[in-house]
Length: 157
Image (cartoon, rainbow, N blue to C red; front, side):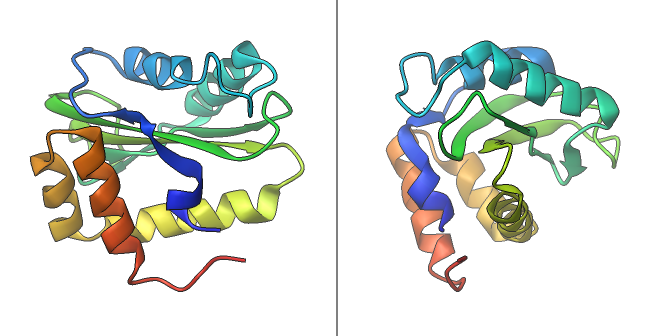
């Protein structure tokens, strides 16, 4: 499974204007209000926000990956936000965040969920990739950058 199999252009916010991590998480989750892959939006919200309480998913280098597992989805879903003005995400490196990737998996699909988290983390460790995302000003351009970068990785099974 590839990131671009689960991340869709209509689930990308290219110009998020909120000021808190809760706002960005909630806005990303709200993108799935009428998505057929979702059974219960509030279960998603609870799973992601509860996971965030355990430890910040702001992993460093201006990037955060809020995530959770729940039976509120039929399959793994993803959303992405580019934040022109950084926000405090209580990141591990104490630096503000401007790239946020939301990943929500089914409760019983732990393996694919972990593999996707790993792939996203590896991609986001590349400074040029992050810079390209920050420079992109439309969801279409952001999606294209993900597609191009993902060509450098083998398929996840």
